Structures are given as structure tokens and as C-alpha cells.
Length: 608
Image (cartoon, rainbow, N blue to C red; front, side):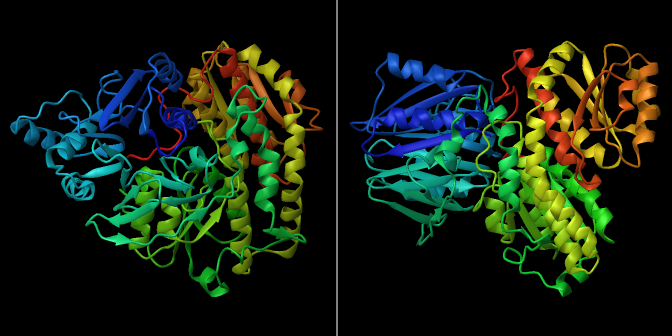
């Protein structure tokens, strides 16, 4: 939920940290701060607002130091004030730290320390950690951190400096993501590996219950008892250029335009000769596939909607018993999970707390677990092991776009491959769908060429008080995602319904100020959806239609039509999502919203 950056080396310390924080700002942006050590003295600056405001103060005050840590906050405990911003310093000015996560027993620790005369200065849970460290520190950082990890409960990523250790940054992780990097004579730590790409691509992803010492000379890793252990680094194949906006006004627009290439890369090596083959990534046998009677898809937000697409497609391919579950609910329900269950966990970051906890539950109960994630080496990847990686590259915009299409692509391939292993996939169906998948990048490019048309449509409807999105069958999941995108970045109320459900309640809200976005591909359900459009028209609601090229009849119902290329019925969600993303983007832009960093949202939700 928050962004952390630490640096030790010979570069300009504040410059490295501020640039790193700017790359983390999608994770939290209500306040920011930086702390450095110079001549055994801790100095810190904090400010409400964006990293740019912090950078202005750093420049104005000529703030500098030998090494340092920084933080960009998404508030959980304590209001958005300069006093509550990180870093936090102990009352004796000997320890400074930044924190991502939640310390569950912070009140208890605070009461104990206050009873010993230690004065607290903030409303945050984080201060309990730094004050406790100040209380127990006796010159040995590792020993103090070991005591801290045994005292606090909850999820945390901590980055810590001690006033009398001029060549050391210490980190500790339990439940919140943290990555460590090292290059020649300089060390780094961050919440997100994208912040380190400019300096090194060889990184260590911190595990739960692990701490590390970072110096110019290298990195050492320890468990929470203080025992040192070896740790293998991982090479990132992402390009630093992926984290730059280029000529686009927003990362979201750039990432929308990257989708044809992302889908092509996702198919590469997985589809050849009109045949799907995931055997290089999944060591599954026909016997394995035959015993999985139940398939559970577990995810949150946009990733959940990608699994809804997958479930609809897989239902057409074989005899599967499928559930799509929101991760935050899955672990609290009495759902039968056993060795006959294939549990598929989808998380863009691989760090989503609810999805991670759900995976641990399914694993404990004997399910076969598979991860679909965009970050190789992420926590859920390391814990589950077997994974299909979406090669979308870093996604900076908080509202997911290209990772959604990458997830849909991988999930569709998974459905085809699993049906093939089980003997349910007809050769004609495999040839038809793999050939159609290979055509998707070109059809996405066609949809992107309609950007100006969609922008004009968005201008016409930017003053609406809200929107309904409707669709039937495989047109319903992209309606869900289209409504979510609009809510996330424009702050307009938007809801998606299966079109047939409108008359069961939602139709009461329809009037001339509430447009209906109808996804109406030319398929077997076309006439049914048209009847729902007519119901909406009778209540004076304006209609925006996403329809198939060549549909000569849709013009009888509305003049606001975005036509999509024909594709196989199962793949309509791929084609429909581009106009919905662009529509949301241009409405938000027309309304002057902060598109890449919408209010109250963070890219990766690493706390429950």
C-alpha cells in the first residue's frame, strides 16, 4: 500500500531516493518523506502530498546525506498529516525507519513503552516499531531487529537505519513486499523492483520472516532468529524504458496502447501450428488433469473479472465444475477444497494479501495450486511454485489495463490446454480458437485506431450522473470490467449487470441522465440483448452500443455505436475491452481526474 526506497552508495543519495519514490507513487501518494544519515546524525523531511512536493523541499533546504531511506504513504493508521508521514524517528534520535503494512498490536506496544516514559508523537502504528527499536537498541542492529520481530504482530516491510552505523541499511519483511538489489559499491531496497531497473536487474525478493543487511560491499540475509543463510538472486528481464511514460500524457493510455504487443508476447511459445502447448511451464499429465473435478479461480478486482471470462470460456470447452471466487471471501467460507481441486490464483503483483492467504488455505487442504502473475519471483509465485507468467512488463497506472488482457490470454490458453489433457478438446475447436487468438493482436490494433471516435463519444457523456453496463454470456464479464474502470478513474458511479437482470430491479434507476453501455455482439444472444436495449430506451436512457462490424440493425436503436471486428464468440471480451478502457480514460480526462493515481486507490493491496 506504501512505497519504500532505500539507497547506500556514492551517487547523490536524495536524487536516487526521490526518483525511486516517484516510481512507487502509484502505491501511495497522500504524503511522502525522506531520512538520511550524515556524521552519525539522522535528518528527515516529510510533507503532505506528492513526491514532487517533497522534492521541492529537499532542493530548497539543500537536504543531503551519505545514505538514506524514503517513503510515499497510503494512510491506514492515523490521518494524512505531515506528522504521521514516514520516516519515523525514535525519541532518542538513534533509529529511523519506514514501514509498509499494519502492526496489529501497536496499541499494546505503545502502552508498554509509554509506561516506561517513552513519548510518542504520531497517530500511526508504525511509531510503535521505531520506539521499540530505540528502547532495545544497544549497538547491535541485528539483535535489536530480532527482538522487534518477536514483539510485533501483523504484516510489515521495514527499512531501518541506526545513527551509529554509517554503512548499513537493514530491512525486515513479513507479509509485505520488499526487494533488495546490489550493484558495484552500492545497495538498494524497494517495495517494487521497477524502481531498481535503472541500477541493477539482479535482485533478491525478500521472503517472509527474513531480514537483510545492505552495505556498499554487498547484502547478507538472516532469518528472524538472526541466523545467516545464503540466498539466490533473480535476474529481471524487464526493460527500464517500460517505466517511462514516453510521449503519452498518462501511463494508463500508454499501457492501453501496449496491449496488442502484450497479447502477442503472451502467446509466444505457447501457441504454435494452431496448437496450444504449456508443457514447458506445467509438468501436468493426463492423469493429473483427469483427477481435478473442481476448478476454483480466486482473485481480486480486475483479476477476478479476468477469471470470470475464463470460467465462461472453459464452460464451452469441457465438463468442468468451476467456481470464480473473490479472494477476500474464499478463505472465510466453507468451500469444499481437496486433492480433486485445481485452485488457480490470479494476481498482477503476486503480492495481493487476500489472494496470498487464500492460496495458503487451498494448499493446506491439499488442492493443486497454480499462480498466474505478472511478477516472476513474487511472494505468491515463490510460495505456490507452479506459475504461468504474464509477460506484460511493469504496469504503472493504478487501473489495470494490459495486465487484464494478458491474464485473459493466459487463462484462455490454460482452459484449452486443460481440456486437451482431459481429452475434452476437439481438434477443430483447438484450431479455431488458437488461430483466432493469433489474430487478436491485429484486431486490438484496429480498435486502437478508433481512439478519436471514442474520445468524442466520451466528451458527449462526461456529464452523465452514472452509467449502467449490460451484456449477456461472454459480453457480461467485459461489462463488469468496463464499469470498474469508469468507477476507478472518473469517480462516476457505474454498475454492470447481466442484461436479463435489468428488469429485476436496476431498471427502476433508468432515466434520461443515466446512459446504458450495451455490449451487443452479433451472436446467438443478440436478439435477447436488443430487447433489453429497448427496455432501456423506453425509460429514456441514452444507449451506447459496442457492436460487431456489419451489424446493420444496431443503428435503429442508437446512433452511439462503436463497432468491433468479428472474432470467435469466445474471444469477444478481448475485442470489447479496448473501447471500454478508452471510454473510461477519456471521460476521466474530460472531468480533470488524476488518471494514473486515482484517489483512495493503490496499485497493490498488500494488507487485508
